[in-house]
Image (cartoon, rainbow, N blue to C red; front, side, top):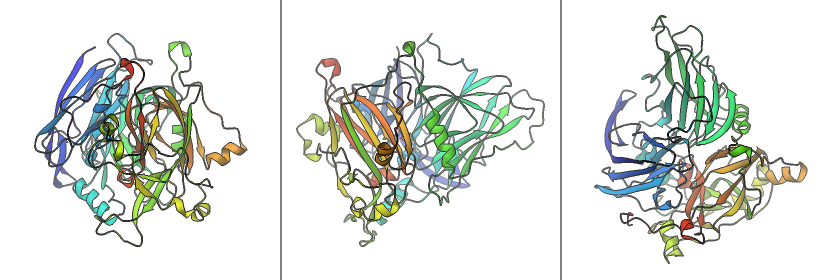
Length: 544
Ligand code: C2O
């Protein structure tokens, strides 16, 4: 195993997009940022130097961070921010037992809009993929673009207690439709597409005109081969798919990523396109490429078919790896909510209150003076409570709007820092239940520090469903993920083993919902032996 070293200088970069010059925050003057490439078992060491005007931290999305929770990155959860003016912090972690496509992004305020890049983990030298070796690969980072500073977008939303402004375009590898990223392929070859949804707020449909895919991994977890002509990908998720370059005679085809919104009255319909170009074709290059026909913006049936059809690839002689015994069961309701305006929200409507979100009616607040992880490892636990509830305060028909109206208490939430304490190796099953409070929506929930098994998912109210039907759990070959797009107005059952000591955030990866409080955290205790204990923080751990 090797050591993969990088230095990330985070700073200002002037770019021109949509005819407008703009200063963004970026890494090493590149947008998207540098690609980190490693092999399974390697150690990755990234020195992040903050030359930007903002607080910074970098999260290695999907990296399990075994015994390295100090390097996970979410601001005020595992670390205090790296301060502007040249402060630095070295993230050091290994990628043992993981293969596939992951990514890294800023994990403070909305800066991940431009501070992100791919993190690819290939098999060890001499170890094959569990699928035919591709001729070459293309990494596609799908993102969103604003024509103003993201710090301003966030501040505006905070001051008014409302929604932040929508992006103005989608991007593929940092460019939008008129700029056209070009992917070159040669006829007859098979390519590995590594798709990453780095968008802040939108799930996406992805297609290539006249081409089909075989999905082989999601979130760096191998899947059984799944054949489809459309890929659905939520913010935070990744998809590895094989694509055979075997289309008709044309020299070029459009690649398209388009917004998917689960709400019925979706109004944001942006699409980004790139060009797939066949090399060594004699046909005319100037012909307009064929465009794929995209699903409707709110085509939840297509989204759920994709999300719900994936199964995990069993290796090691086909034995299931999902924990069969459960120590702790939780029912976690989540959705948007209303909270009283904070004093600093000077433009917030005091009678209407501020837009918020909650899990089990707790709107998650980050601590201000010390990171949760540091607090959990010192005597400073006063900044949080270990009483995150296992159930919502009220049981009712969560997805029925009129029933929500008669149970208004779930709409008004308090802002608190409460975590769920787990013993080392405790197995946890979570029913994630979307509610109709302020409308149902498909929220991608991301768990730091673990991959989890997706045992079942469905529409409506889990408890009702459970009472009246036999819910079939896949305890044999469920898909594994780090981010699940729970169906709008529906539920998902996930399971994981808490075998990694630290404090691990679970939150909605729609960026707007994180400051609203759609988050909670697990605090996992050390195990009994030194190889199950989190070592002390590194010497350069940023102070608050
Ligand atoms: Cu990709 Cu907590 O984030």
